[in-house]
Every structure is written in structure tokens, then in C-alpha cells.
View (cartoon, rainbow, N blue to C red):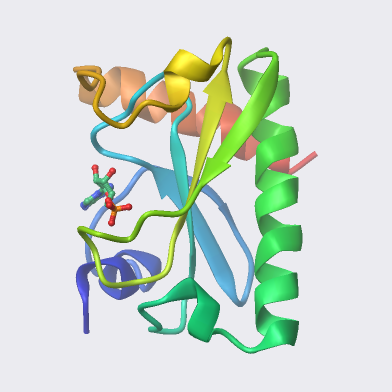
Length: 131
Ligand code: AMP
């Protein structure tokens, strides 16, 4: 099992932001901004565009709900969405609260946040998602 599948299964710790039977959302460990979240299918699939149409549609709808929760927890202009997948071979959507397009630059230095801060951020998003 790959690292993200283990995270979704609870075998590796993560800062959980949202979940349902099929999908899981957690904080990116190297965030570009506070609230930078990854959304994954529990099922192991590497390339997002290898997903079947109906699964991909449900994935995007789940990501939308997470984005709404992120925007409520961390007021921003919009939540940006990006798919790279160059590092971890498990399909994932980056959701990033944006104040400007600069926040979507993956070459930016990453934030260094304490475990307590990460937990607090994840809790805020989880609470909004659960409303
Ligand atoms: P990419 O595959 O290029 O989209 O990059 C993978 C992303 O996953 C990077 O932003 C990493 O910081 C993030 N990442 C890698 N391992 C973990 C982990 N164990 N928990 C949370 N985020 C991770």
C-alpha cells in the first residue's frame, strides 16, 4: 500500500480535514498557505485522469465540499485547485486558499507550522465540513 492509501486507512497519521466512504482530505504537510489541503480517493489510483468518469465526478463533488469548508474556515478570495502528482503516485487534488495567484506558486517556500497549529487548522476545516 502506498503512503496516501495508508493515510486514508489511518495507518499513517495525518491532519484529517474531511472524509466519507470513498474519499479523504488532510492537510499537506508542507503547506503553501494555512489551509492547504489534499483530497484523495481511498482507492489506490495514480493518475487522476485514469479514474472512471463517475468516480472522478464524485471526487470533484467531494473536493467542492471540502473547498467550501476551507473558505469558511480561512476566508480567502477563492480556493484554488491544482493537480500535480509528480511526487506521490496516488491521485490527489491540492486545495489552496488564495489571496492572490501568487499563493498557487508551488516554487514558493513552504510554511513551517507546529503540530499544534496544524491540528488547529485541520479542526477548523473539519468542523466546517461537518456542519
Ligand atoms: P505532488 O505529488 O507533486 O502533488 O506533491 C505531493 C504533495 O504531498 C506535496 O505537496 C507534499 O508536501 C505532500 N505530502 C507528501 N507526503 C505527505 C504526508 N505524509 N502528509 C501530508 N502531505 C504529504
